[in-house]
Image 1 (cartoon, rainbow, N blue to C red):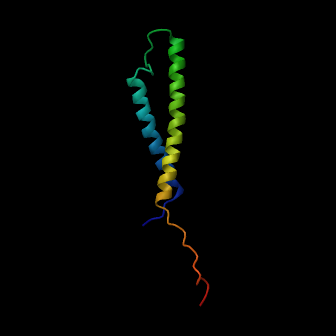
Image 2 (image 1 turned 45 degrees about the horizontal axis):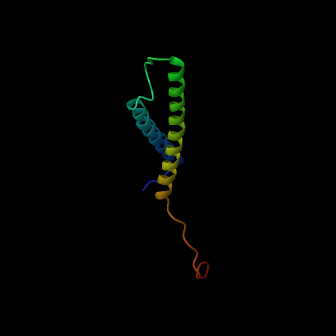
Image 3 (image 1 turned 30 degrees about the vertical axis):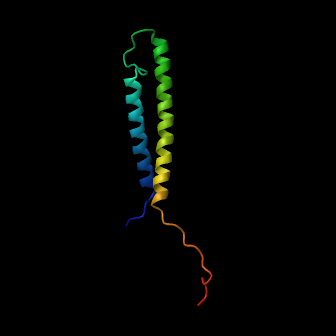
Length: 89
């Protein structure tokens, strides 16, 4: 089995963050929080959409990093524990 490198963790984090971002973007659009074509006062719609997208980016980054860390730790071999007879012929 090939050893996991830091590149695998990076790509995992990017993929999970992209998936979480897409899910949040769909949720925000479905609930009407993000408006692609504002209809009322454009300043308030712009600020609320900007706040939602900032939250989306920050939380997606954290979710991606946590998931990649957990997945990288799951496949890592554990360290051998020292035994009393270690080093004796």
